[in-house]
Image (cartoon, rainbow over all chains, first blue to last red; front, top):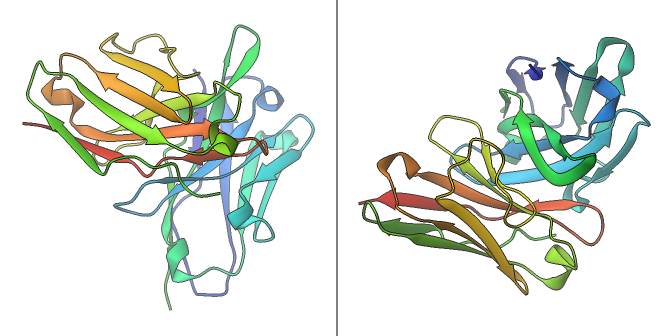
Length: 123
Length: 110
């Protein structure tokens, strides 16, 4: 059974950075795109970016470019999302999620989600 | 990249059908059929309902169906049930190899 286990809740001050981890188990780590999505409590979902662990290739939403870094450590099957220069509006639940792979093709949707990591930005 | 536009809320009685729209631009949906829909019950994570416009993952009831016309995708819930009360989010691949979510729609079962 594939699982994405995320790191615990964080409290950060404005201007600081946060690094959320996402450890995968139950399947080939490098074979699937991993997306990062966030959700401000009570609001909608916001796509942040993806990483392809096999190559380390990444892409991110224009809104986060220059502020978000997506990395992976293949030795421990773990992905990371680091967000810099935090502001109060970054207070949200951050999810990692695996892209759906059906009939030998990626399908442009995510089907397996981590449990989410609450990041609170407060002075 | 702005969020795709969804109605804030829709409602229906048990047994009825409701349709949720998701409107973007040609650069959002482009020539791709990579539109997905998610259901999110209160206090839980999102659940994939539809991928590639109209495909259902195994285990998703056929009451849920998707379609797309031009720059608008739609999710229809037929035979509405109390358990369908949740938030619904559309999700699309874009022409610059990124993705974007919709603004989200709350479905209320009357």
